[in-house]
Length: 252
Image (cartoon, rainbow, N blue to C red):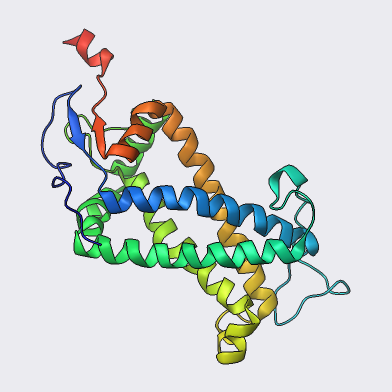
């Protein structure tokens, strides 16, 4: 999908209080699609996990085996459906897993075409320097999330987290989910060997999903701290109002 929105202005200087085009149409569509998709997948996934809340490594795993982790039972207000129904949970999970996977594919293709990955998520070696990481960490701890010289650009922690989610956690969730599918394994038996067996695939699926949930929690907290309304509005319209640093104004 191509984007007819205004070109990125993340590298152009802009004054505090002015509007900056920050999120392309394809990014916004993928974001809100994921809001619904991930919500349903987490809820239905918890129902499936409740059916056998034990995780193993290897080819097989059953009650007599020793699990490496026993996840706590998820309460009904977190599961989909609210009442225990494994068959319905699996149908919802599989349906939205397809939406999730094809949504990621469309986003990746569009981000290569519009150069979103190269412009916004490319990690430069100087950004990984200890001094640079320490500076950005101190800025986060002081609740200063935007570079005054380039307010629309992603900082190194945003880049690292987005790269981890887009290129590691989500693909691992999709791959491990495919390995858990009897239909896929029947068609391509070699898939079981990719992750060391069905039990290992289930554990990898759980770890990747837990990492994604952790990312979402941190993401929501930072959105609130950075200003929830401007951040949400920018993900709807694409335009973001550069915040005014009142401390800098008083110093000036």
